[in-house]
Amino acid sequence: MKKFGFILVLFVFFCNANSQITGNVIFIHPDGTSISQYNAARMLYYGPDGRLNWDKMTNQAVYLGHMLDGISATSNSGATVHAFGEKVLRASYGKNGKEILFSASGKPFSIMKEAMMNGIKTGLVNSGSIIEPGTGCFVAQTDSRYVYEEITKQVVESGADVILSGGEEWFLPEGVSGVHTKSGRRKDNLNLVETARQRGYAIVYDKDELADLHDTVTKVIGIFAEKHTFNDFSEEELAGIGLPNYKKSAPTVKEMTEAAIKILSKNNFKFFLVVEEEGTDNFANRNNANATLEAMKRADDAIGYVMDFINQNPNTLLLTTADSDAGGMQVLGITDDVFKNFTGTLPEKFQNLFVMDGTEGTGTKPFYTSPDKFGSRLPFAVLWASDEDMHGSMLAKAYGLNSDKMTGTIDNTYIFRLMYLTLFGIELN
Image (cartoon, rainbow, N blue to C red; front, side, top):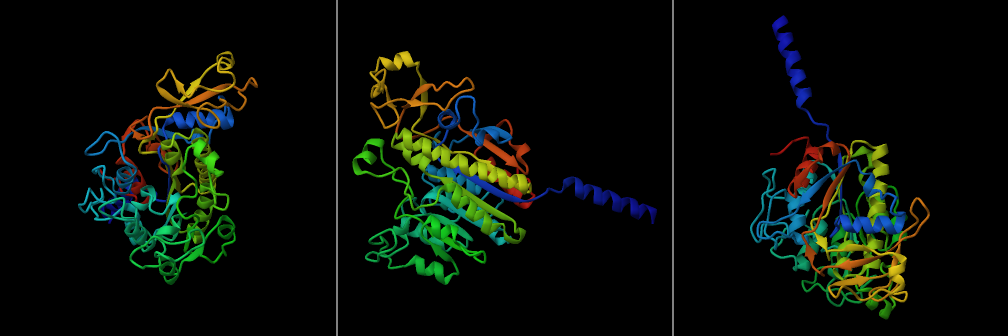
């Protein structure tokens, strides 16, 4: 009897020593952001001595983002790696090229689909269109990122509890008008708004309707724009057509994140939420410094909200990273004396090589930081190396449950593994 009791104690000890605490996962993906973008946003909004919410995340690692067939990721291949934990070809959207992809857990579907099958609540938030891969690759598997009708259909029919984005044009058939679009673009005659309603979703179209959702709502689709919730043009183009960086009626990514968490966390359900600020990527690819920095602030506000949530709900992991560096942004700091030689505005290029942006585009006044600890506001310009997604210098950061496991240098496939450990308590090789 004593021998049996000793074995039982050993068994219980062994199980406790190897068990993992599981919890919620919130993955925020400010697309196209490198350390340089965060540096610029910090200087502008909080000053050189200030700190972003992103700065206050407790753990970090250098992020390696190469693909099977290239050193730089595409948005769709990067998102596929995050969703499946396996390297893929650059043309992939939820597959490996056109081949069915098995995730690192051995399943022929993404981590989000696996979460759904295990009763975990799920949500997708994107400031861009519903077709954007940063969220779409978690529930859609297609042969191309350009089959927008099929991607939208798969996202709507995925079973995710919360889907908040733009992209009304791909919900509606040609000739059918909506709230934001005069005519849908679907050629298959499907009305996915009606499909969503039949599947029990509440439908909202602007930030006021999102804020006014009844507490009993458990499934919602937000359709906040015809395309993106932002106008991704250069500063000069936006000034010419009189459009703001972001659509005034659309909720911010922070507001969408807050609404999603409120719904997903009801009754203490475990949940998995993927959030993308797409403006950080699209504006950077347009070399629009003004709007890129606004997008960075919006992403950082969402990060801050989630950190506050975790402080009250410590069984939650926040992860954030980007898969590439859009535009290769750099900050050029020059003294006031040098700027005076530019007669108040910046040259269009720096040393005839890099495109140089001020507050309203090329050839305009420089940015000034918020005050530093001495009260000084320091001038700076933004330089652009390209209008493409570059390999860049990306960091992955973590806060909350299992954040201590984000250290050193990680491969892009590790994002999946840390999310998987937190959701399911299983450490994958």
